[in-house]
Amino acid sequence: GGKDPSAPGYDLPHLLVTMSGYDIRQLGRVRRALEDSLIEYIIENTPDNEESDRRRPPPSLGRMLYSLALSSANASPKTKDHSKHRTVLARAHYGHQAPRRDRSDQYEHYAPPSRKVWSNVVELPTDESGDYHGRFLAGKNGSLLEYYRTKFNCQVNIYGVWGEDGENDPQLMCEPYVLVTSEEAKQNVDSCLKFIEHRIMEHEEKYGVSRERYSH
Picture 1: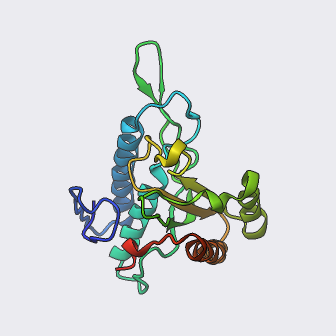
Picture 2 (picture 1 turned 90 degrees about the vertical axis):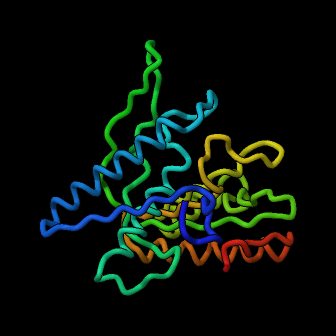
């Protein structure tokens, strides 16, 4: 959850964790241990789906890792830009091994890597029925996903809009969203975001959908 009433999960309990000390390396280890615990929780509590690719990370993981990175950046005394949904360095969501059950029905997964990528999250518009619109950002047969990779050197993942009859992904533990990441540069993500935001604005005007719930 959070303190922003316009943000997804506002109605959920939220927890404020503060860390202090003089050894930056030790603080970093404590932060990673906390992240590992939250990642493990997401992995083990994602609803099982026989049709899902177990080699892929749980769909909620990218948003959580971005939120953690944004929160940590906001807590730094060196941070001057506190705007919402800005691009920050976050732990990569890919490389996290999804849980798999062995014959004893126990979960097994590898420890998540500490590799960092530039990351940002884009909220999706909804129509009057409350259905999220996001498939248009993938393009026909995924053509735009390839465009994001070749033009901006970004990986774009769209979560929560691939269910049938407008239903959200049952594995998603948060609101549907778009995750934009790049291993190379912050500018890559920011440029890709401008393109995506323009596409969303066009879609909103054409179909009468809106993201007003996030504008307050």
